[in-house]
Length: 195
Image (tube, rainbow, N blue to C red; front, side):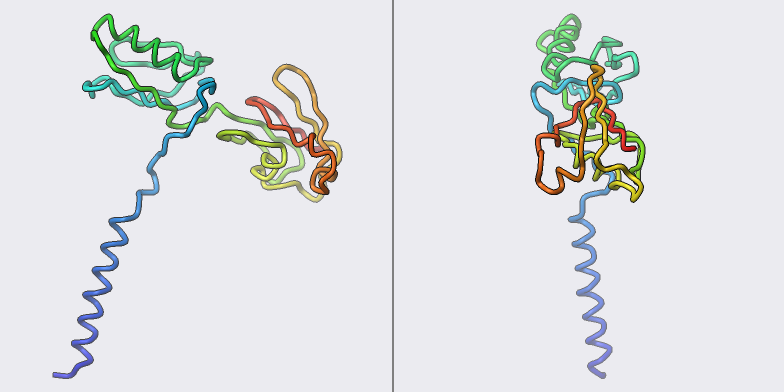
C-alpha cells in the first residue's frame, strides 16, 4: 500500500478534529451580553431588562420598557420603570412580589441599552439615531455616523440639548488640538446638526 493515501487519510482525520474544536469554542453570534451600567443610569424607553426571581423560573423574564415607561412582570403586571435606576426598580419589584412570595430575591439587569440615543442630522454619511453605552463625545458620535461628508460646514456644528440649550462645535479646531473643551460628553436625547 502506498504512503500517499494513508497520509491524506490521517490529514483528513486531524483537520476534521480541529474543525470540531473551533466550532465548539466559538460563542454564538446572537449571544446578548448585558451592558455594564453605572449605578446612576436611568432606565429609559426601549431598554431591554432581564428580571430574575431566585428559585422561581416562572417569574424570570426579559421585558422591554414600553413607550408608557412601564414593563410587564409576571404576577404583578405593569410596573413603572422609565426614569428609575436599576436598584430602585429592583426594590419596587421586590416589594410588590413580597405580597405573593415572602422573601423574594429579585435581580434586575439592563440587557440592552436602547434609550441612550443621540440624533445626528445633516452632512454626515449615516444620519439618524445613534445608540451608545457609557460616555460619548461629539467626535465619537460623528464617527458613529460615518464621519462628515465633503460638503459639511465643519466649523458650524450645533448641539441641541433636550433642555433647549445649544452648544457650538468647531470640528476643525478640535481635530487640530485647539479648544478641546468643545468636545463635550453628549447626553441622552442630544441632537447634532451638521450643516
